[in-house]
Each structure stands twice: as C-alpha cells, then as structure tokens.
Amino acid sequence: MLKVDPKMVADSPFALMGPPAKIAEDLIARRERWGLSYIIVGGEDVNSFAPVIKILAGK
Image (cartoon, rainbow, N blue to C red; front, side, top):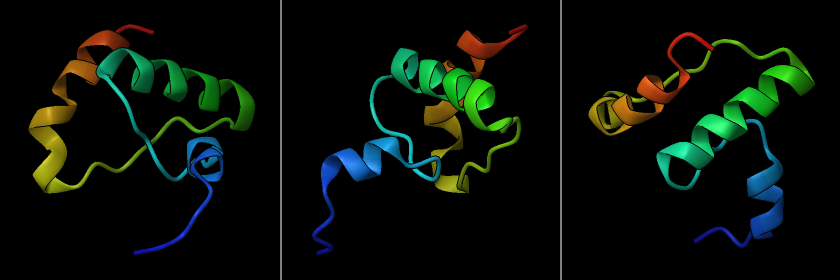
C-alpha cells in the first residue's frame, strides 16, 4: 500500500474521488485552473462514471 497524504491525492489532477456531484465539481474546477477538458476513464469504471457525465452535460 502506498503511503500518500490524502490531501496530495485530493489536490492531484490525476485522481478523482467522491460522489458524482463532487467529481463533476472537481472536473469543472480543474478545467478552469489547468485548462483540462479531456479525461480518461478506465473500461471497468465507465458505467459508474455515467452520473458524472449526466451532471456535466452542456457545461
């Protein structure tokens, strides 16, 4: 197990954690802060990511 400060993970643009509304909020903030507009979702997570896409649709 990696011993990483949870705040470091939460602040990283490479990890997303939390309920769909929090993830959508984080993605919007990352787009505004770093200009990131594309993300990669692993195949095993596609279905569970659908609620996030629904929240972000049209934003």
